[in-house]
Length: 203
Image 1 (cartoon, helix red, strand yellow):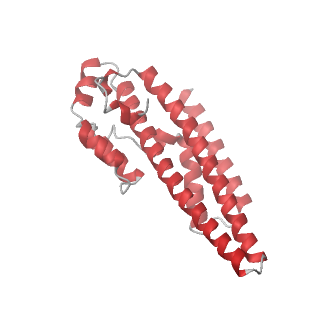
Image 2: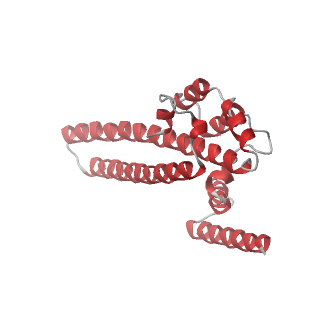
Image 3: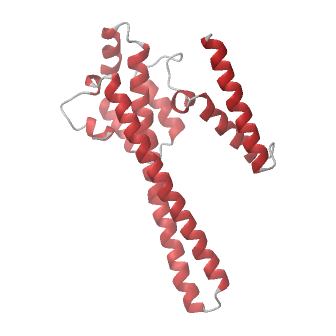
């Protein structure tokens, strides 16, 4: 059962325990990994078609390969939409789990906050392909009635190390880091500092 199924059943989202939410997160993350693998495979096939079209001289074969190239791109677009949808599902489940965990000392306030959510609005936001992950995260927090200090952040979803890797990639995009090896070294350094910082805070 996926997140959208929650909106179609008599059972409310408030009825899900932290354990159930964690299990759903794990299931969705497996699907996300599988979808990324499909996307990588399609991208590889598309690149191979492009290479073959460059190497052949026959106009007829090139037209055929051009059609296949476009078909792969269309497939990739569908898979990318599925990946965005899965990201929203994971975001939704993670937000609900964090809300449950952060307010676990006062069970009534947990249910009260979630029950204020307009599930119809949440479903509409979820199904709208025009709404990206950042906007969805903000709107999800608003719908769930989360204050600024409780709102779901990217670090909540990825963890500090995952967020560090994203920042390294952004620095590579901006030209601050000039090679893949340099980027990998920087990502390892950030991960190491994060682990050491976590160790110090837990001491």
